[in-house]
Image (cartoon, rainbow, N blue to C red; front, side, top):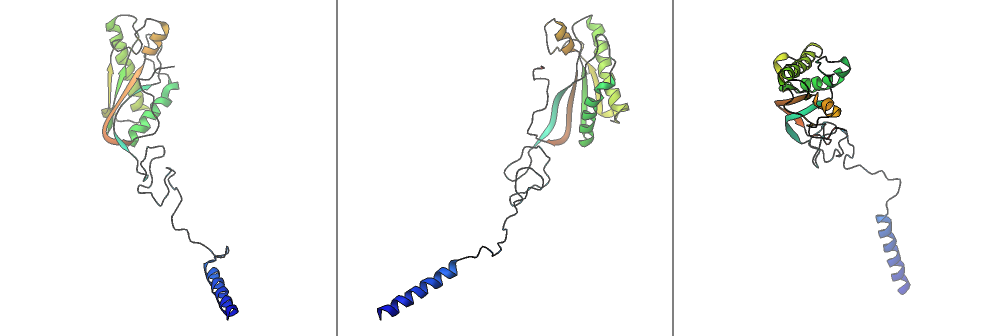
Length: 201
């Protein structure tokens, strides 16, 4: 009788183990989509904002943060001493600004012209205005930006980025600033753009 009970118990144990065993050949279904289609670092299973701008700061659900457009950029455009000739070698800088304005059509840009502290204030006032005019003219004529979206203003040598009286300071102060404002909003990008507050190397 003991042998019968033992045989019955072993058969039941074997049936349980067979029921819980899963063959490696059995296919499994993927429950969640682990792809990252817009390459923002968030899988599709958690994505709530598809198509995030590449490089934008995002939250845990892939939604990009936005900020109002109101920023100042120093254009990497250099002028010779006592000159407002805008060399075509700097058009790449203006193309970048023009592309931004085309992407955000409600933006406006004020171009500021600045001079080094050499010569009279009156002469540099006219020179700085001509430098700003040269940039706005190029944006209009070369890159198709509506002149009504552009303002040019010269500041003579009243706003130096480097107040020292050295040749390097004079070179740095012959510069152009683009102040961008608008009703549009732009993606808050992870990187920091080159601004006038950063030290020029």
